[in-house]
Structures are given as structure tokens and as C-alpha cells.
Length: 246
Image (cartoon, rainbow, N blue to C red; front, side, top):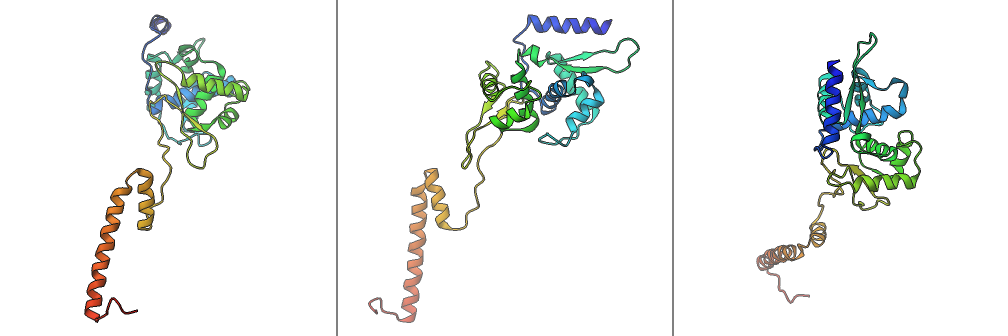
């Protein structure tokens, strides 16, 4: 009964304070929340989840990036924090049950549609992806949302104020499609393209042109040419070579 009272108190607090800060989340909190969202749609018969089932969901080696190895106490700490901000609800046992179970309330707290909820969970669990990849992987979670519905969901997640939940990443060289990333932890992934190490001075100059430092490199190059010319003059003098000799 005491548990029910605390639960009602938390629900009332959330309703009275809709702008209560909820982000950024830690990586553990975002993983736990996304797993609850995923399992609610994919294994409804086992939902809400026990602590053991939730830990296994966080640590599974498929459909996860990065792969983690959380212990029970890390999952419990994340659940307590998520509960304090209204994103998780504890379901206490009744009728002789012994195990507390856990369910997500992000759909209520953030007022997310099934498509938005599915897209967000896939981004958290799998990392940056294109719209097509998100639609394929979120199909079961989002209730078979179409490509256009997923696109609308992503735009809605990115357009939330004051805390957007997703962001469209810049297209990298050689990529055809833009990718999306979640913003639950407040961090945007580093998407700078890999640059091969310099193999010659010419390559260095080419990169400097792109960076707007051509003038400095031309000065360096001119200095190198002058030094080589001076060495050549000294060699010609020692060898008795006439500059006019054809």
C-alpha cells in the first residue's frame, strides 16, 4: 500500500510539473529506457520486465551498439533515476508475487506516438542510422509504420522544444543518405570522415588548400626549394661544374 501511495505521488508530481527536466540521460539510463520500449512491443507476454530480463535485454549481443555488460546494480540505479523523472514505473507484486517489474512511461511523459517511440528506441539501441534503416528496424516497435510516417516521426523528435530527442546528421563524403542520431544523452556522435595520414608534401599542401592555409604551405615550400638550391650551388662549386655547361 505504501508503494501505491508513492507511485500516485510521483504521477501527480509529473502531471503538475510537465516541464520537469528529464535530460540529458546517462548512457545506462537511455539503454534501459530503450530496452523497455523495445520489449514492450516485441515480447508483450513478458512485459513489464523483471530486473533480470531487463539486464539481459541491455546486454544482448544482437541489435545493440555498443555492446555492454551491465550488472544488476547499474540497471537498478538507472531505473531509480528514470522513475524519479517519470520515465519508468515500478509494478509491485500482488497476489503472492515476489518480483518487482518495470515498464516505460516515456510515451506518456513525452507524449510520443508509436512511430516516434519506435524510431527513438532504435536510434538509442543501434546508433546513427538512415531513415530507411530506422523504418526497417523499428517496424515491430512502431506498429508497421510506413516510410513517410517514420520520416514524420523523426522530424517531430528533432523539432521538440526545448529538448529535441533526435538530430539529423550531416551527410559524409560518399554517403547517399543522411543519418539520424538520438539526443537522449545530449551528445552528437563524431561523424568527421577519416583522413589518410600524409604521404608527401603535395598531399599536405592539398589538405591545406581545403583548410584555407595555402599561403603558409607555399612559404614553407619556397623555403625548402631555396635550401635545396643552395645545396646544389655548393655541390657545383666543389665539383667545378659551370652553370653554363650544356
